[in-house]
Image (cartoon, rainbow, N blue to C red; front, side, top):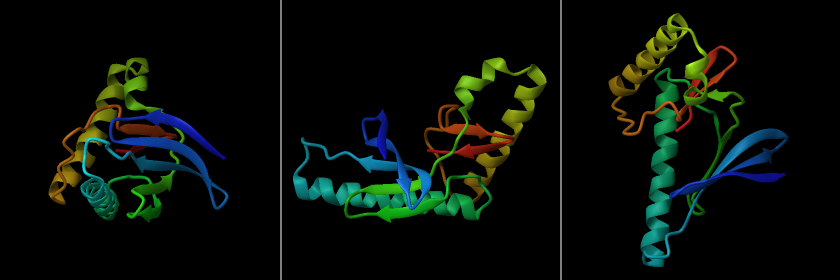
Amino acid sequence: MEKLVAKGAEADLYIVDWNGLKAMKKVRIPKKYRHPELDHQMRKTQTNHEADIIHRAKFNGVPTPLLYQVDNENAIIVMEYIDGVKIRDLVDQLTDEERVRLFKRIGFYAGRLHKSGIIHGDLTTSNIIRSCDRIVFID
C-alpha cells in the first residue's frame, strides 16, 4: 500500500505500510535545475538534518512522530502515521477556553524546542496535529 497524500515543493508524502504499521513516507524531490550531484548531496544532507531534529525534539520532550527508517541516500524518511486533525482545521471549533489551553501547550513545547537549540522557522497550525488528547509536531 502506498498512497500519495500531499505534494510539496520539497517533498511528497505517502501513507504506506511499514512492517504492518501504517506510516508516513516523506520523499524529497530532486530539483531538475540543480546539478545532479549537488542535488543528491543537498537532499541527503536535508534528510539527515530533519531526522536529527525530530530525534532531538523527541529527546527533549516535544511530541513528534517516531522515526522508523531514515534512508539518506534516497532522501526518504519513514515515520509514525499520526491519526488526528491539524490544529488549523480544529481551532475554529474550539471554545475560547479550549483554545487558550491548546495554545499554552503548543507554546510550552515551542519553548522546549528553543531550549534545546531548535528553531523551527515555520511553526504554524498546519504543522501540529491533535490526536486524541495529545498534540504532535509533525513538521
